[in-house]
View 1 (cartoon, rainbow over the protein chains, first blue to last red):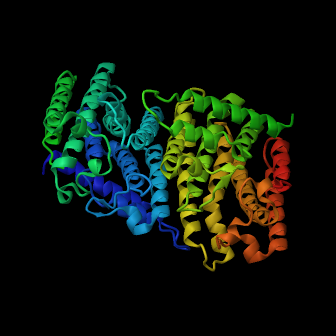
View 2: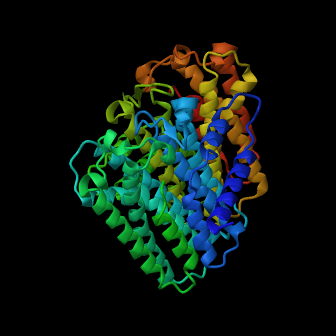
View 3: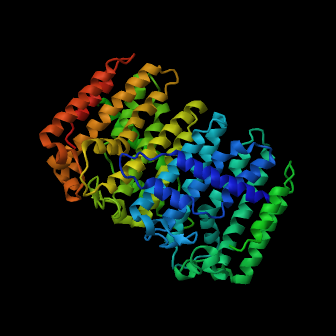
Length: 292
Length: 292
């Protein structure tokens, strides 16, 4: 089994165990657990937690110590998908090849499931006995900063629908909406090593900036070039919603060149790490070649 | 100036300074800051942070050390009000005598403002240099547990609309929906003292259970007996929405007796604290006599 596949199975099983451990009080009907499980366990690439495991593993951190951060980052990501899919936001009815959460459970329960998942992300790290308090505070602070920037990014994204925007504004918006949580996925894995050097932290921060923007431009390209079935969500959603995108501003070919060069910069960056960067390089190459 | 008034002014100024410190990036239009300020600075009783200050002060904690917890608890409370008011939830158009956030900024920006405020609550505590890491982790863990239970409580509340429920279920629902965050307001103030005894913690926990349920029953009574103008939100909202309430199950007189006896139990409880409990007793009496 390939490395990312091992991590994917690990995160899936951690998420399932964690959600099962939050036993609903059966004295009354609370749908919250059902909605959370429906949304979290539907699958998905699990790219963010895989990044966290991969980075932490470069520095020989026990995987057991990484589980809570890996879960937290995915819980925040899933909460953002649930809220983004709502009718008042992006109004998407399909996610991970199944009806979006609000299509099955209604808007109110979907909003609350997102709210609950955000709280659980902070709960799972703060209650992890494997991590010391100083490190936990750093992890929780970074997670909170990224979660806030993500909400800010989505707010900007909604405000520029149908507007003429330049590439600078698009970059800025995505830096918050997608980039901040991707950066967090990398940096959580790094911070778990209390002895990591400032130089390695700077390199990983820079790596994640290039990779994060590359990832988003590639997402915009795939939205145009890939079928709904493979994407697990509707194709051409940006153009249907009049959302400014890289292909709409730069053109498709230029967008492909742009994201490939950003991934290459990300790969060049980590060649200067103090540890063997091969697993992270392999993951980045795999990512560059992804088809959804 | 009376003590709660001093705390109210303090929390209002802390919240305003904090929201102003999150400077929006003016290179694009993000409404998120505007929505957050509109919702947070609209006023309100500020009862939760006043509780936190009052409890912390019993144990001689510097107010400066309490500010981040006081802000965090109010940010979580305000986020919950924004989301609860949404059309798909309680559909309330008036809050604190002004149009609800979604009536002014639209549903999407209101949802995101709530999401952002939840993240900020964890950010403000995790970045507070006045508090040591061990204590911070305890505070953040308690806050995350309470924020999750609050979402669970709201989920249950929505699921019992128009249903026949008994008083046990109503108590359980409110224990999560309102009680958990009130308990958190008390316990954050207590945990800020690293030397607090187990006995005092147990007493405060028990105090907050009685007080929290009393507060909710009183809220249900005030919803029936008080004008919209004084409440700052619509009168009779429970009965209009077919929500089970204490007056609808126990009757009005019995409900008043019930909450008065719960407040009295709360007051009796704290007479056993190892410190002079007068400020907390006075606050509880003030609360029992509140008219909105």
